[in-house]
Amino acid sequence: MLTITSVHEMQSWVDAQRAAGKRIGLVPTMGYLHAGHLSLVAQAGERSDVVVASIFVNPLQFGANEDLSRYPRNIEGDTRLLDAAGAAVLFLPSVNEMYPEGYQTAVSVDLVTQGLCGASRPTHFRGVTTVVAKLFNMTKPHVAVFGAKDFQQLVAIRRMVADLNFGIEIVGAPIVREADGLAMSSRNAYLSPDERRAALCLSRALAASCHLVEQGERDALRIVGAARRVIAEEPLARIDYVSLVDADNLQQVTELQRPALLALAVGFGKTRLIDNCVLSQRSTVESQQPSEPTENTLDCKLSTVD
Ligand code: PAF
Image (tube, rainbow, N blue to C red; front, side, top):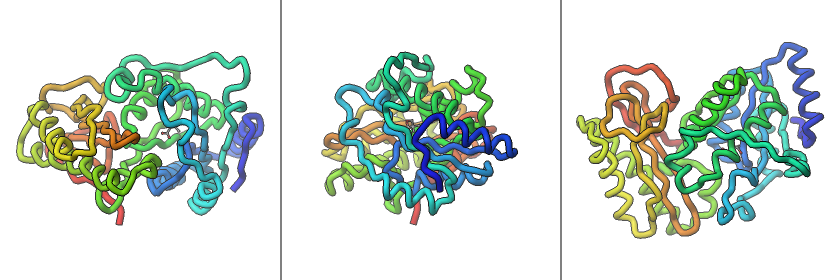
């Protein structure tokens, strides 16, 4: 696997691959990789000839009091994992390479970034869409894969790609969970043993709401209430939000009629975790994709890894 740090070299490499008729897959990450990221690399590999994985801890998407300086990093370990996963290139730009002196342009997506995480992190998605737009121009992928745990990010990127005519296929990959149900996240590394145990209330909360829906409940307040009650029983948990929103436009729903996203963000000590599941007429939470066709049954299993 090649490691490329310069934008110019990245673009030259990818131009040569394109000229040779190769289909490029991109997996953008902030590093400190886990099995969830590696599943994105595998999905990109299935849809392309060569996979570029990027690692860049993007300062633009962290708020003033967030965890930029302590964000976990392990470039050596990540390089080994990406190599073993079959990535052709690790793209590893510095902050100065990404945002050279004088940099002043941003890409922002309006409506879908306002609620959910956007309410408490007002500059976050603008940072995400700006860096992802730049990564797209630097790596020129045919297909890019993002995890569905960051569902709002996935929706915003799809919107950006459609609105700005990027012509890139965006794939949303299912959440990968630990055997006990905790969604994999680089931020799980921050949790103390007690917080790690407490954080299991997230998947339990989703499961409780899913169970209610499977029994026929369609009222959003009751569906959300079931999840909130589970989290409220956990003394170490602080709810930021628990919301049921339309899975395509992320607007609040009052009744479950179309595919809806049950999304939550909860703090444990200094760590804020997110999780979600899609309650759809067809798809299980293992195949979370906005805008999927629907059928008539609800199925709410949470996926786990062994
Ligand atoms: O999901 C992430 O890790 C980041 O938000 C992304 C997409 C790599 C942009 O920095």
